[in-house]
Length: 222
Image: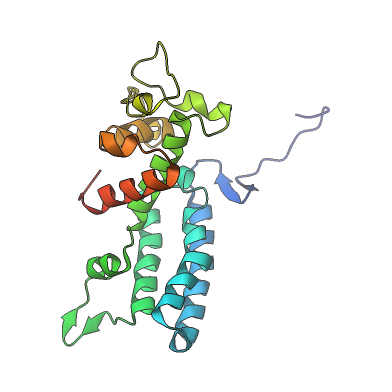
């Protein structure tokens, strides 16, 4: 109710570019990402013969990757079946950029080798990278204050802004529902505590990003 007027119910709304549904499935938002990315990959497919490899990579980083990354720390809570749709598009983009066919010389082209060649993280690990970056900013007081309560450092008495404090482990809250297990407040400390201490102590976000990316590329599952 607002001014004694019944507000109409909406099952889906777009807020700051993020499509939110009443059940928080993020299906609508992922469908929108998939539609945009698919169109961009089709465009790249048409013009790739005019572009060197470096330009194809630049096209991906400039016109496709930002759509995967935007609000990924939120929509990554979606069910795996929805995230897998984005992974298929990422694999398609890799094949277009490297001009690799699904079957080549009678053998299946493994996308793992394509990702390794491009130094890409698969979409689920890309989401973990972005989650880790956001956590780093919170721990090091480089984000808005309203995000700080989302996580807690193990030593809750004091948290001075020093390198030593940024390497501390985070408290992992006890989840009471499966929905909470997908939340940032649960996933972030779980991931953070697995990142090597020397990476957590990075003096800049760029150094931290490089360290976490290397870590994620060398582990099968985080």
